[in-house]
Image (cartoon, rainbow, N blue to C red; front, side):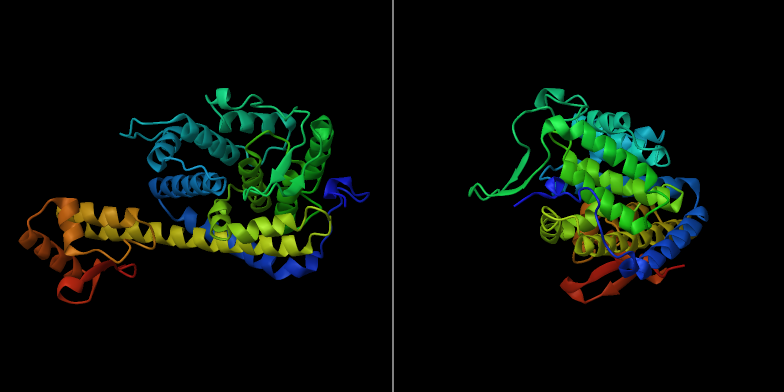
Length: 365
């Protein structure tokens, strides 16, 4: 049986665009709302949102490949790009490379795709780690087949990509399609096709998944005509098994209706998460502004720590013990501080005695 790239119809991927019309409309309406909301925030909040979304994308995209990045190092590298001072001194090569890649995609979202851009991205991804990858910043040249093999030790080949000698020709055709499809495909359909098309060629020795996913961010930003931050990889990681199964279903066909519908829904979920985070950061700004001069340094430190946990907050809520651990305050002082924060409406209290927990009041303002 032939792989998709061996079919006479390759690479003419097909699907019914009418099936995602409503998803497309929803996506574009949300994109407009998010942009309008972001425009109402201050510069610091906007930059914080950008850094948080890029951080999420970098961490989760690497996690999908089984590689765990150091969050603080990645954040520090991203802050450096945006001209922000950071006290963290541990900036590691992998994180610096990922940060450079993400920022480049963000800054050049509207530029046409090219071989040189892809090679540059690959070089950034493996920045200063060239010793672990012989073919860095270039397409693969190994004469051995590029195979995706089962990790269960049974030797099953899930997919075999085009041979290395064909990669440049295939990528030239891919790049031509990518740049031309900006006006000929639906936005969500183009994002889904770009990803499966790129992954089918698998042009690099390593890093194909991560580069294939930042391509999706580029497609969506081009469609929205602005840098769009939705961290698709975070939603993919949550549904990783289904993601790989859907990709596998494309291995021997160019009829990709199932894939387009699946991936369009992934994008919508990622966008929803992005909007939730944006609303959360705006609420943080409003709350801290309203409480300025009314709370002490301990209380401010704890609120900032709670906001740093994101919209879901501390697992199980904030306890008095956690407050004491964060502030090093005596128990009596911690109790007074917490009572004050509840009375001011900054925190909500649930439970009694040792089951008492505190939560950010996101309806504060």
